[in-house]
Image (cartoon, rainbow, N blue to C red):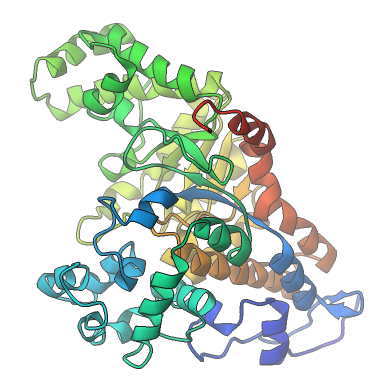
Length: 482
């Protein structure tokens, strides 16, 4: 079919992305180009970009990964993750790493996040480095949050007092729902608590929880897992009983299990039998330091024990892949093996649904092939949009014309502070709009097919994969909800 050749003006393109605006993609006053040229497919009487943008804007996102602390802890300001309860807290997760990578001296970094420094004076510490980091995904997420939550277009010496006032005035009872549901337009969040294996959230249907299994197989963490279970661990069967306890107590309420062990090792877990791991586990209990190969044997056995418990409960297994948070510690030589190891996991346990997180950035093309080949492999774009907005568009474009569309999850904010989730969601919506619009422009999708993908990739897949309606009903009756 011959299509009319058009160009889109900046205004048309921004309208097509809904309320996101140019800053959601490129930040500040930078221009957002529409389709570069060529022949965009008509979408009835409205061009495809506009239709896609409007649909993306009104469709809720299911947030599949956060590290949010409880709202009551934010209200009190008393939590070990809150370094300083002022506007600098918005920069304390992820963007703090960009600041160090940009050359901020460690002493200035410490002062910037210190509660001893006046919040208004903190701008002087940030100012020399802000131009270097404001256009990264991390920087954009904070800028958009400041704009959408406080009505302030940018951080500067002239606006910092208003930013601090906005920060203080927003933190009132109910502000999580205001931020997540009203401003970010999320359906719900899934939280991987960093302070305990499972958080009995006071907002259980908003902040749905994973069971953390990392301490079940790494270490293992005898104190954190064993003490709440009330089980004295004297041998491997006792530790199995500890793991069983956590699944018996919270398996009905959890949406998934999660391990971020890939920060310290590859995800190449051999299926080790108990009799081989037992004597090595006893040596750990005796306080011995095992050589790497023996420690891997124990970790691998415990990993599969926990994974099989999750599989019995029909809980997806979320695994970190790819890029590391922080700075100065990431061994790319190990990360490149994550996709190959993912295929081994899928092959060993075809009944387990694995969710490979963060698109294994920067090795995302390899991860697309895992989802294409293995029925039990899903890919989660959590964190990816702010690691690299451009790479995330490239990934999603490649994924949607390569692998089954019912196995992709397109958003997880992955934050400890709640406010930047607004910015991340805005970037994700702009990226999804651009992805689908470019696929239509390039002739890979029709407008109708692009539109039909929006609901599944933004919320429908997550609702099905994590059985969210069933979990919501369970959580409404959770024993800790008074």
